[in-house]
Image (cartoon, rainbow, N blue to C red; front, side, top):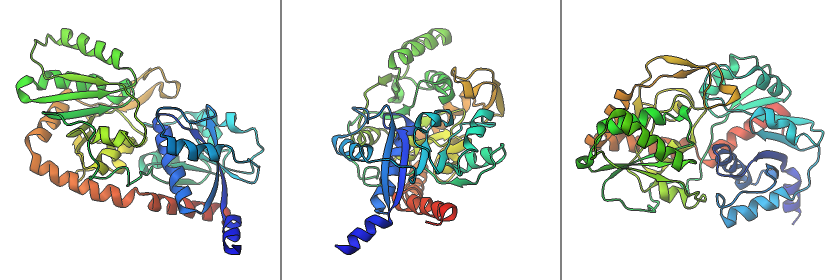
Length: 376
């Protein structure tokens, strides 16, 4: 009984400010929180944007666990982790924090100066990819930067998961917010030009704006003069909880993302852990896990400046990877026509991801960071 009491006293006290919804920020935060909690080395208080977990993105089991963490008492002695866009940190500064850690992700080069000013007010900065480590190291960040990748629950994401659906044709999955940065324009043009019904393939687009996506596909068909007979494009908008999402993803034969830039990007990592082949752009944070041995890479053709990317302030006048439609076509066709070669990549990816992005590995990195900063 005394040992148990001492163990409680020895736990590192954290206040973790984050989103708990269906966003990528939330998915990353949930897994890091659970990795820390599972180790039993931490006493975690949650400070959630929106005040409570969102439904239906979070299961009953996780909901109850997170609610208990939310109701814990806060105090200035806790180490605060701000897992959010830096400009949102001030919303969670009601307590006079003595120890704070910023957690930032940026999808291309040159993060905003305002971000850097805010991040420099913390004791250190956590980034999920070596790409972001270099981006912030070359910016005006004066505090220590720690590279701690996003992680995944290997009990939910592994090659033995049963699929939610079984399709009678080869099925590609695009999954992400309906943002130009995600490369949907190039992907849809590549699809319409490359595949017809007799190829026995389909593309499923899982996004937050399926009606807008459907209208864009129809518009592109007319602009390209695509006749009837192109391979089908389907749309999915349902929000799955963390138990059902891997089963949905497992239903597909290949994940494809012709992105212009990512800070990390979690869905391709999940697919690799599920044993699903991945096609992705050879640029930015996704290179944390995607290389010639683990994925089919879409090579970039230089960079292009965008005055306004998706109407997002921090993306104004930034440089993004340029991806050719023809290369996307070739890579999708290659995956379809070379199952044995793709199987080797998929096996490599599975072993690499399970070994390097599990809860224990990432918790160890987090603990090493705290030890170096605070000697705890």
